[in-house]
Length: 234
Image 1 (cartoon, helix red, strand yellow):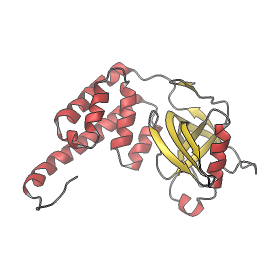
Image 2 (cartoon, rainbow, N blue to C red; image 1 turned 45 degrees about the vertical axis):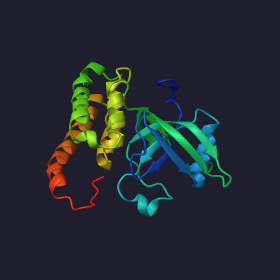
Image 3 (cartoon, rainbow, N blue to C red; image 1 turned 90 degrees about the horizontal axis):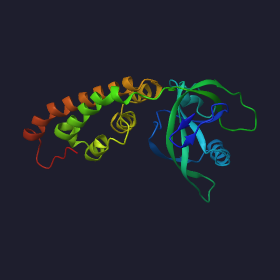
Image 4 (cartoon, rainbow, N blue to C red; image 1 turned 90 degrees about the vertical axis):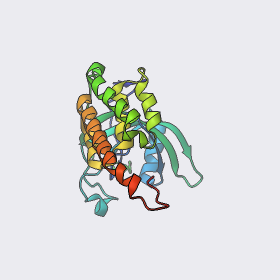
């Protein structure tokens, strides 16, 4: 499978880097500091290959008591590519990763005594390319909201409008970035990651942004009349 210019080989197991929330979405960028011995080993191993691993999410709250063991993981993951890497004097690593594609854990490999980190066989979650024409309505609605309504007040809104107006950027990609940057609810983020339907993802992001727009509209009169002197709403 190819994601842009990067090949993803689902015939081999992937190292897993789990956290308590969605770390990165396809097309997104994220900086990570890998300091635990198992994840230092993970980075060292993947740097000798295709520089790819999968970010995962813990299932439930058992990870808080079993973090250093093998607490259960949610099935949807994001395969990432290391774009930049630095190894520091203390042996830790700093990496910038780009999300390539969503995938699902098929089965996790048992511990073998050599690999400190967890590994799993994965399968792609989304095989068919999104139909861009079906997403244009969502795109137009969000452009209008972010350009002329209360969403324009959000930090980064003007830059996002420029991306939305750039026809060379696929709508499916835009909604991935919108979702990760403006959706703060972890369950919604995971729903976006776990969905194999671009229209469903666009609908989730659109509904949440429009809900936020309604909230900002209701808050506007209060901001104008009730704000005490010296109050900052940013």
